[in-house]
Length: 196
Image (cartoon, rainbow, N blue to C red):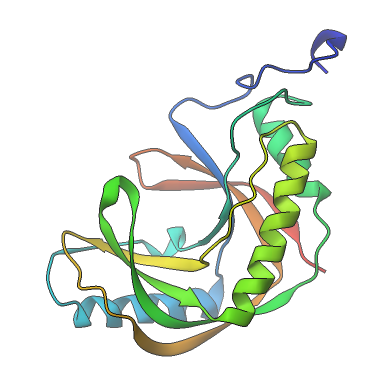
């Protein structure tokens, strides 16, 4: 703790300016390639609007981001890394099998590849474990429910009907902590933990 202060760190020590942080699943190798192929297929099939694709190296499925700070047990990034290390969970199969339309950052529509119901339950369990670990490290409680998905591209306008996609079968064997440089299209992985 900071200087043996019983109340811990105030929250912004070790916080990189102009950065956002989140835990995520990041596809690798053939899985990343398959998701990239679905992205290209979805772009070709879009109804209206110019597409801004998500680069291959930034494709991810978000798990959670740190919520309102209470009192941290260590500097900001170190507290996030301690939370990641606290999570003990099993590897699992994740199936992405449908296109959908969400509102992304700044209300801009985005086309996503979403998971099936069974996969969503497994992803939610991992997210809940992370939420408890973050709470233990002094972050605010996050009891929200996920709609697990990988964002493929953004556009000015998208029609919303759900349509099936050729499924991507993803063996999830790790999760990561990402430091995102806001507005720079850059994701730095600053923590990586295996699922056993």
